[in-house]
Length: 290
Image (cartoon, rainbow, N blue to C red; front, side, top):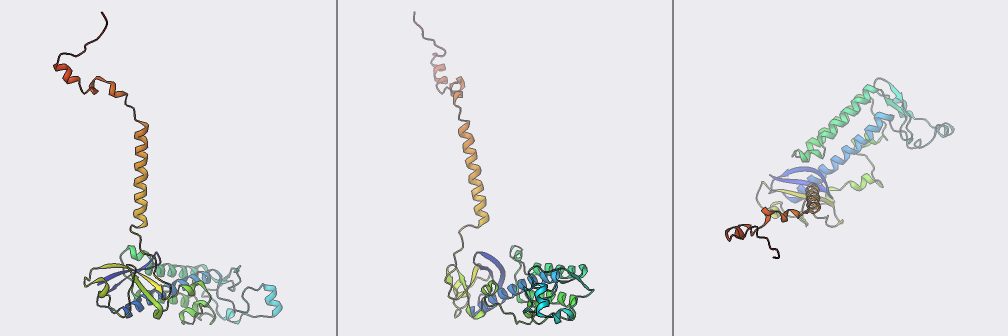
């Protein structure tokens, strides 16, 4: 199996294994699928952190309004009255005005936070350092854990306009958002390796050969964005070590220059003609006028 280290720009994402005989059409779609699913999980747990702190989403027509404006317009949060967290709620006002402030109690909050940490660990970028390959099953497991935590804390469900529920139902609208720019459609994804585009019409072995123990760094890119930057010759960690070595070397040379005292050369033991004069019998001759 060829080991693919998938990156987006210079940032590591995950490891993926694939046979050298894999069709790049399917492999590219698989990489994009895992990449987008990880982004979905990140969006969900980001909103779940807010859910644990400030409760469910307000209706779109009430978001950003003050209490006085809501009262004046006679608006009512009907779903907020239905979606009560298990064990009761604790009021914690959302200063941004996106959520209703009816937060879960401490016990339920810890359920959400613990599940988020477990999901993060499953699809963490640290899995690359641990040499653990990512699969779609692993990402789905993380998503299922997040879904389960929401169902425990909110057994009656979330409002239909809550971004967490919309993500779980694949109804999210990411148009005009930064999160939407990060998503890469499977049909528009491209893989690059060694400054070459891995064309979908070919096989992986057409580029990396038939050695199944090969490890390559591939970069996922949106079609039309051009070739990504090439990998540096040395890693950032190696560059730090190299700079540290040269800095230490410069300090050593500086100390040697400061200690450049050659007065010792006037000592008798430093005379390289002393032995010759000794055998010629001309040692310790003193010249003085008569």
